[in-house]
Amino acid sequence: MFGRQKNPPQPQPSEPDPPTSVDGRKGRPTPKRKDVEAANRRPLVPNDRGAARRSQREKFARARREQQEAMLSGDEDKMPPQHRGPARRFMRDYVDARWSPGELFLPAAILIILVLLAGNLFPAFIEVIITAILVAYVFVLLAIIDAVVLAVRVRNKARAKFGADSLGRGPLMYVVFRAFYLRRMRLPRPVVKRGEFPV
Image (cartoon, rainbow, N blue to C red):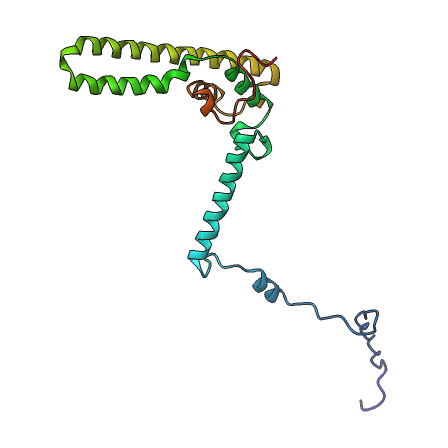
């Protein structure tokens, strides 16, 4: 009972020393997980909300300036997504290569407003004024029909050349809206002359 133990305990192997660096010093201890998470944790609400808002506004303004400059220079890489790609460029060039009645929509709208004001000032010429208004409305209706027919034709040509998946969202409205702008007001800027239809 008090004698020698039959199976004396075996000495436990000692754990290997941590690797040492070249200069013989031990490396820094592994950081704890909670310390790493605390260092990476960012507040959902910044401390200085005013500075954060100003920074966000400056970021958006800088992005808008870059997109505006790209629309003027023709740099497609920095244009808004709805203007990028060969199919969109094809549709723009086709619209810019022809003259559309919709280009006179803005002058016609201004003329209608002036005629309506003249009707209030000169009631004696009411028949002439009504005739002018009817002519302006007929012109606007014809411009809308022309733009829709053009949009369908250009969409079909672009679909046959580039495939339906490359047209993007709303190809018809893309063409219609461009046809209703004066040529010098269109963005992205026209790069083809009248009559230079893309092939």
